[in-house]
Length: 398
Image (cartoon, rainbow, N blue to C red; front, side, top):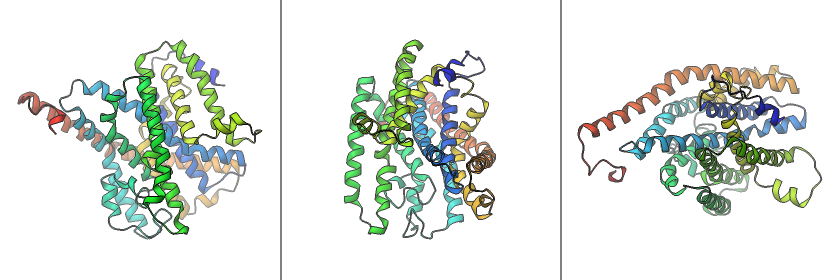
């Protein structure tokens, strides 16, 4: 199956060099919507329910794609910009903030400050400013309460913050492996320490378990895996070597990923390898997949649909929660009978609705925000060119 998919690539000139990144994002958001849609209209088949639930791993695919993109962007721009670190932060802020701020206002208007699953004691006033400055990922009750799914934005922004300082120290696969081990240690310590930092009654202990899983340290290893993928792409290894290494690796990780879905006989190898935290396995699987897709961007996977959905993915991520809420409140979700086909049809309806709404937000919120950030950077760089001052022309002066 894998050979058939990637062997269909014929070197199509219509596929741009980095379209595979948008395609990865498109697949990622489809996975995320799949899991949340299945929670509203669940299939009857247990295996299908598991597969739809694993759409949640689409977030790990987002992280791998993000690491690949930002590493390539940083290397391409930092060498010729006067203030590469500042410019990096400006780009990231204006890429995320405009749509995210609209989401904060919208969800506060719709949901108010009343208690919810993620904020069982209600949303307090300080939750909002903490979320607005992207620090909501450091507290169990703020990480995803103001904006549904906001935990992922917090994790992304934390990665953005450390990347310019991290990349100069990751120049080889060996150094990347070193930082990956460190990230695993930090992730493990995170799970051990969180229960000693925050205290909740028995009925709210789920907040600590979820926080340990959702926060930045819990996801850091996946980003490091994405950086590893960038290093492999940077070296421009022969495609034959990529196929020999990544092909079998992809198959092994896919089997490990699918292992929980099937009642296979228990054995030592399966228990030790296949019971590795699932999101880490997903990170490795998606990294291998991204490397294969970068070298063989088959039109079956990299096409107008997947790349367009990928471009809309950020708005789709923020809006699909609201769409699911309104589908439920208006009774639309209730018209779907409890069946496998109905669950998949409901998923498609959510995707189409989210894409339609997100096209508007992408055009009138996201793109203008990106353009504003670009203008600020260009003006800053031009000012330095017109008024050179060696003492100030460096990020170290900030």
